[in-house]
Length: 222
Image (cartoon, one colour):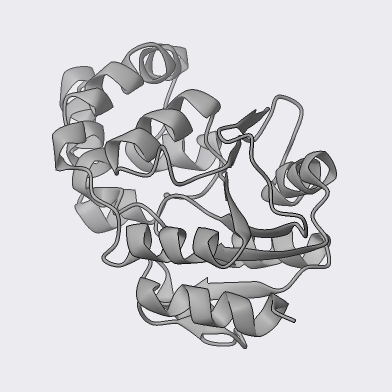
């Protein structure tokens, strides 16, 4: 699903696509306590924050394995039935990375459209984007749709729907980088995110979100 948030488009479409967790959102601020609460409620060991954070940006099976080791149908049903409402209890802690709102404003000012491409479902994406104050700063939201196995597929769907003349993928994991490679667009790695060790061999990296507009314009600008 591609949700078009804004209707106005620049004459020349240049699209900056962002991963969500660890790129735009400091997800650990609300997702870690929510996961730990679910573990307590279901009687699973309460995992360390670092263990839970390591699962961010992966598919739901890896997330389940991290939060509920040896999970069964009961844990699966609980997570997908009540996970959202438990996360919502902690959303007042949600924050974007420093410099992200300003970076989105700068990109729009110089003629870019912005998109989120996440492995999460659209409910979570909308909830998180709103909680971190980016609801009016993102033009498109792309979930990992039913039948899709990886972000390369969802990014491809987004690019086909939007049809930009130029595009770049921004993220903090090698999964994000592979999605860019799969779709033959450049990639910028976020060293400030959850997996800086995965960004060591990436050519273009941002140590702070404030660097993103300059890096994006350097890759896609005329």
